[in-house]
Image (cartoon, rainbow, N blue to C red; front, side, top):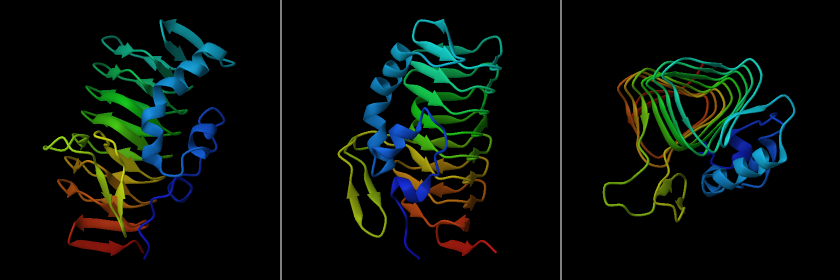
Amino acid sequence: MTKKVLTKELFDCANEYLLPLFEESQYPWEMLPKIKDYINKLIEKGMDGYKLIADGVLVGENVKIYPTVTIEGPAIIGEGTQIRPGAFIRGSVITGKNCVIGNSTELKNCVLLDNVQVPHYNYVGDSVLGNYAHMGAGSICSNLKSDGKAVVIHGDTEYETGLRKIGGILADGADVGCGCVLNPGTVIGKNTSVYPLTSLRGVIEENSIVKALDNIVPRR
């Protein structure tokens, strides 16, 4: 089975304000250096139904932001999203609609499509999460190699990204269990589930169940 890494293979983006970002990026990691400028342009242009609640922070309708949340701009929070107590949005974050950003979760330079859930103690930096992607409690996207060198995506071929920081790429419907670590540049295919406490790296095929990196079975 081909290990898919193209943006169009991993995501079905129907979100109107995120679609241009996805369409212009052949590979999802190509979005990462663009996020800040992309958000700033949307904020400058304005979005119907969205309002500025602080400098550089644009929020849609029916967003619930609990006390003790910290949001640094630039950031756009999609309508219907919940941001729970203690969450830290550290700038250059744009979410789709109806997402859950949970207690003590930290986001930085990332894109979330619609209905994403990062609900408990998650770190998501320099990452792209697809529609209905879910990260279990305590799962994190490690975004920097110990040697500080540029991240290489290990798929059917080696993809030289030229970027020092890449976290996780979770395709639509990816589900990561509790306590998992996504090593820099991990790509998880559509509708793939990962058992708890798994250390992940490379490109994981779509429609799979990951019991361990050496025990990946097709979803039936």
